[in-house]
Structure formats: structure tokens, C-alpha cells
Length: 337
Ligand SMILES: NC(=O)c1ccc[n+]([C@@H]2O[C@H](COP(=O)([O-])OP(=O)(O)OC[C@H]3O[C@@H](n4cnc5c(N)ncnc54)[C@H](OP(=O)(O)O)[C@@H]3O)[C@@H](O)[C@H]2O)c1
Image (cartoon, rainbow, N blue to C red; front, side):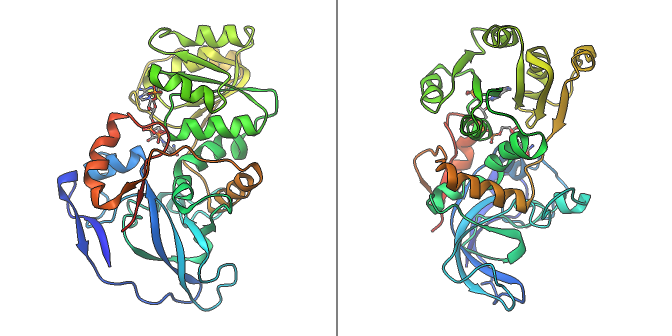
């Protein structure tokens, strides 16, 4: 079969190669033919060796994939040949509170990822893709959508009528925007890119705050919420945004710490966190069962992920080079072969 293999760190060392075909699935396993994969910011860091230079190489990158089941092993009852499925970021983290190694064993580093034609997986580690979505749309879900879902639904569920603030218009934030709207929340979206304001509004954002025009955007967020503050903030920037998030949060509000695009260490005044009883929660994607719960909700809501026009895996190197420039709106998806 064909796969992109990272022999040593650096995008220049990622090569499309012929590697050994998969064997037949063992008991409890399935053979998947990947049809689509999608890119996350993490993938570019992994490839560059900046995420964890101790990841074993050679490795097949990318964490998100969707495909068709070609063969099922003995004792597999939940899936049949021909089913459309998606893989989970952390295949061993089945539900609840995982052991450390269960949420550290993840696709696209240290485990082989989805930029390949076929893969064998435990049937317990995969999920039926939502019936309302194509495989291309489904391949956008495992990391970004589940991260947004875990923040807003699994860790500390939001309620209808509450206010959610999403930072930027990347994959995680747009899924958080869409999920929050389905749950009946009001959504504030901050963005540095005026060309994306209208698109975010069309997706349901009730308010847009330009971070270029209002670097201290917490003041605008407080005005929008009649000084109450925001109930739940999707924190993507880290170092350059967390102080604003703390200032924008309501009493008893939640800040989900998801990304550190602006850096990961900082000085901050923590007194408002204590005095306003703000809950700060780190989020790392989510479990297989949470992925399944989310997919079933996506079906009921008929939620459609926002995708850039479909790209092809023969162009994967160029696509991965372009991705960190952040020009995309929503998820970047490739068709495999
Ligand atoms: N913890 C987890 O489980 C988890 C899961 C997925 C992703 N992440 C992390 O979350 C972050 C976002 O991921 P993504 O896939 O949504 O990324 P993405 O699709 O590349 O989107 C990033 C968007 O965030 C905005 N942005 C860029 N730099 C920023 C900064 N310094 N401060 C605030 N906003 C900024 C930009 O939006 P505008 O152009 O609109 O300003 C940009 O388009 C990354 O750090 C990623 O590694 C974490």
C-alpha cells in the first residue's frame, strides 16, 4: 500500500512510499480503507519535530481519518464490511478518566496516523461516521470537533441562553461555534481576519469582535453581555489571550484551555480567577465514547462541518506547507488516492 512516511523530522523528509500491505484483521479488529484525512495544527508541529522530538520514526503522520471497512475480524459485532467509520485520536482512551498512557497513545504520533491507504484498528477504537455526512466531512471530526464537544458538553456542559466566546476562526473554534448554537447559546467570535467576519456571522456567530481593532477585547465582551461576562471561553491563544479571557469571564464562568498559538508561558494576575471562581480546564481532544456521543448528536442536529475545498493527497506536502499560514476557514481535508 501507499503511505506518507516521515523518516526524520522536517517536512522535506515526508515521502510518499510503498510499504507493506496490511494483513487480515485479527479477532476484534477491522481493516479500514482510508478515503479522507484532515489536518490539525498539531500535525505540522509533529512533522517539524516541535511537538515531541522523542516520537519514534519512521511514522505516518496525521491524526484524523475516515474510511470504509473492508474486512472484519472474528467477534466484531458492531461493524460490518462497507460501514463508513472514523478513527479516534486516542484509540485506547475508551471513556471516562483514562490512564496516562491511554491518552498519550495517539494517532499521528507516536502511533502511525491516517496519511495512508489502509489501517487495522481495534473495533473498540473506531466510531460510525455520522449518517448525514460524507466521508470527507466526517474526516474533519476526530480532533477539532471532539475537542470543542469535550469542552462544551463533556467536561462542564453549557446551557441554553448562556454565552460562549470562541477565539479565532480555526477548526476547533468553528466547531465550538456550531455546537454552541445548536445548544441554544449566544456566541461571540473574536477574529484577527476581517475577511472571515462575515463567514463567521453566516455560521451563526451573534457577535464578532475584531482583535486588531480591540486588542483588549474583554471590554467588548463584557459590554455585549451587559457586564455579566462570558459563561464559557474557548481559549486558543494561550499566552497572548488568557489574560483577556480571565477579564472577559463571568463569575463561575469556564475557560477551556485548548491551544497555545500565542505561546505557552506567561505572567498573569490570578486574583480574578479566585475571586470570580472561574473554572479553568485543560482539554485534550476526548475519548472514543465521547466521539461516538458527538457523532450521534451531529446526526440529530444535522450539523455540517465547514470545509475548505477538497484537496488531494498527492499534493500533501504543499498542503502541509501552506496550513500554518492560517488562511483557511474551517477544516482542510484531503482525498486519499
Ligand atoms: N487541546 C486539544 O485537544 C487541541 C485539539 C485541537 C487543537 N488544539 C490546538 O488549538 C489551537 C487551534 O487549533 P485549530 O485546529 O483550530 O487551528 P487552526 O484551524 O489552524 O486555526 C487557528 C485560528 O486561530 C486564530 N489564531 C491564530 N493565532 C492566534 C493567536 N495567537 N491567538 C488567538 N487566536 C489565534 C486564527 O483565527 P483568525 O484568523 O480568525 O484570527 C487562526 O485561523 C492550536 O494551538 C492547536 O494545536 C488543541
